[in-house]
Length: 344
Ligand code: OGA
Ligand code: NI
Image (cartoon, rainbow, N blue to C red; front, side, top):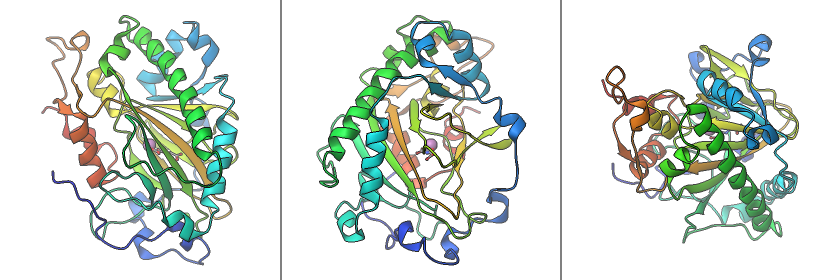
């Protein structure tokens, strides 16, 4: 697939639309895709797995990690000891509050998606999501990095937080290896010198939240995502047992998602979680998503440990760079991207 380096049409910042009484047609989802904001799946939401990091790091959460990865594809992680999250979040709130012309200096393009953006996917005329974002490649470091120069220390605070998340991920990978019943270094070896990126999602107030989504249904393409949810505004929904469940984040916790590459690696044993974001009319919402991915040139394939005569390899190998590019061009598509890798 040819990479596209320019947006197909002028980019509109969602933040500039937040003050209206209605939303433009481009943001109105078809009825079948609209969220049901009145639904309470409280019973199911209570089942959302919560794992204590100190227990995980001590090797004491194997069964909980196994059940969470197998049955949900994600879990909340509490007691992780990362003290730098609040400062990073505050710095990004300040960034999104800057005057528009200041933020526009960092406008992104679909060549790398780095910088200030307002859409995923490059299809001309496609329906859009109610959110702006800032995307940064952390590792390998990018030549085109677009770190904002304001607010002061934003980069330092973000890198400090992301460095701490990277350390937590090392432990989570060991715990997942244990849960899979393979040797401790299995995940580490499979991902090699992993890549990392961070996306700060900013969902402005939406005058008609029942018609829109902050982020359309998708699974994360890479390995593991660690999401720092907003500390007081809910918005993340996961699809579980066919239902959209609103996650009620534990204060101070993180959310760990299984991505498509783990689904491929484990030959479907642990499936990536489909999720989306709902918005609301009262308050904006900010989240920080840290993506732990294979390096661009790595090809993840179903590991021998999970391929048997009864269960042959379910997924076709694809270089991560090509997979990522395909998704970036198409935009969010539920679980259709990983379905495309599935052998029939
Ligand atoms: C993402 C994502 C969820 C959120 O950035 O991939 O799913 O709550 N974010 O913002
Ligand atoms: Ni996601």
